[in-house]
Length: 133
Image (cartoon, rainbow, N blue to C red; front, side, top):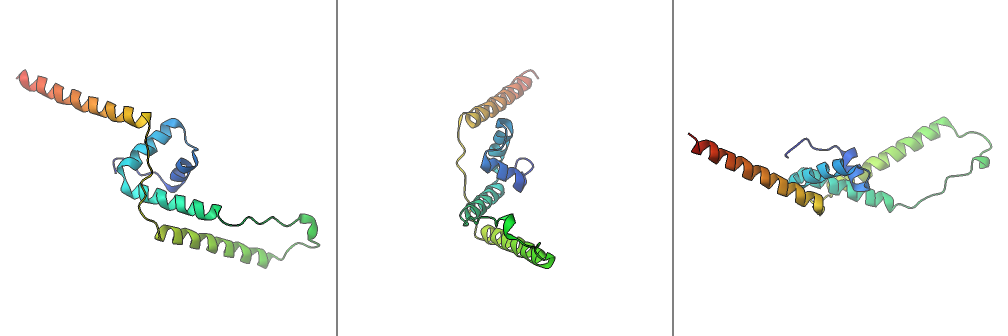
């Protein structure tokens, strides 16, 4: 882990393509070095895939209700939905396998080249300073 690990929201935005180029590059470079974050990214991707595969159910028409639903039923339904969501999340994260998302492109190549140049310049500067003594 070379830098601070991104949180789940940032990794989700990374998967969905919602980041600026600069922020995307920062996350991509971090993922290249941090296996823990790559695993978390894989887990988030699996949960998103599972949720996307759930059947879509049309919402009932508002006109079909003659009276408002009971409050206890609403709370029970919300608790059931929350519990089901958490169960899916836990199951998805427990069965995760490390997946390395292939990150390639011109940005990463240029960044690596830049880091190599800095290292070479630092080494040359050290040699010059040692030679001047």
